[in-house]
Length: 96
Length: 463
Picture (spheres, each protein chain N blue to C red):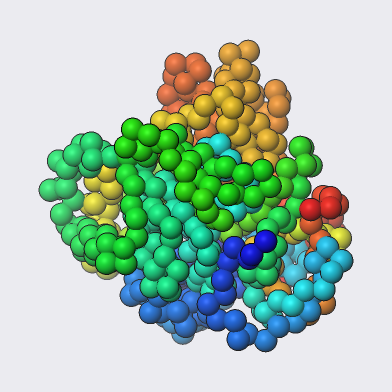
């Protein structure tokens, strides 16, 4: 699927992270949730209740729909900064 | 011990901290973000400033507040997630996590400036990926410099116009604005326009945004009802009824907005007195003109004490700082009164237009009290019908509801559903939201790891 978002200043230097086991180039120092959206990641996790797909909704730390795990700890992607070597996966251990 | 702790570095927090330092107080400012600005001036000292032409002069006003703060001796702790607030004999202690460690900080007084959150917009499909708030759209633009490719903006309120104009300026206008307010709402608000004229600058700005939207040729549909987002794994279209027929606009992103409401998680956790604001259809902590709450030494200011916007928030922050300074003996009562006059006058002018705006852009009934099949608690995936059913079975308030099926008990702790739960119970019991009230908030205010808990040393050792 075509990414739903366009980066207005794509010249920022990128670093490699792992998203769900696959390498991904994201702008260093960027907001992780925004950077994943711009990279075309449409689903961040599946809910533990029904397995429904979710992605960032509020971008301000309020809704908790952008939950991911980073090095095993559940975090809000919208409150995390991109740095080289981050190991990020959908929260809840599902295969989103 | 510090004179003043300030929680939140938006306009109210930045202005209050700067003013407090000018008056000689030792103040510490904490915020979850990486720098000052809050949500309205998000990334004001970093990427946002490079996009001044897109974001406009109002956004750049935040740069002045941030510059003054940076030049002040205020202690600033960013990327700090405050998860407990406790009153003690000496004052108030905040417990927070930062970089995987936890610490405590104590002050004689506390100013809570936690701002606003988007009002929940529970419509069918609002939990699908691709559905975000208009505020999220703004944050993505300010902090990340990204915009959605094929977006529809839907709902009601001036923020939709601002976001649409910013998108158009960037060469990526939204496919359409689907608005829920009608001409009848504008007419109903008209008598409030005259008393609101002291807020004429804001009104002119709004009219300017609408003119700019027309110039860019952005399609606007008003009086839309029955909004629903379509899609199975991702939003694919917005469906609605307007001009007497059901219509669909295919899109990749839907940005929803029905105004913002005070973020009361911290003030409720402290069990401060709250009141129902009927026109804003939201709760806010009870406070006087200086922001003093029902608890001695604890103050509120800005949108967290009732929605009035960024400029009003800065002046409310200054007024609170002046009162706190006087209470601690840094300022005589006469000096406080004299120095409060100018910010109080500006604040009152900024607030003058709110009754008109709240009436002209009302929240639709179907959003306040959605149909039975609509999900209201996003975390626990509970529908409006389940809430009504539990209400009929005897759940009289939001706290009792928790025992029936956990609404408001997921990771967001009710931030996305609390107002809807209250509205639905008020409807079921034929009472008012004021009588039903909001659910109780308990610490931790934000999730905390065992590692962070274990790292906590008691006493005053900022990270």
